[in-house]
Image (cartoon, rainbow, N blue to C red; front, side):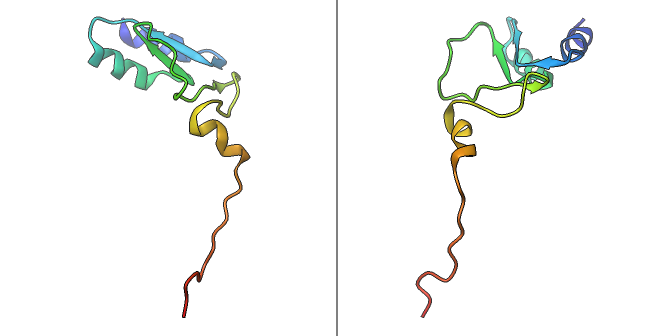
Length: 85
């Protein structure tokens, strides 16, 4: 039962990664959207260095890799009035 599987997967204190195997990519995407995990693998894909990596719940917050991994090292500055007469 799909409902039970999603409920059981989400009813843990951890959420680093989960996995969905399905013959229907549309169904797999719908199920993966309901998973409370930092990464959801569908049908055993190759690792993507452009995808953020990190967990939910007690698996930790924050992300590594991709643009998300750089965000905590950036300082944002607003410059107002540049080019004013």
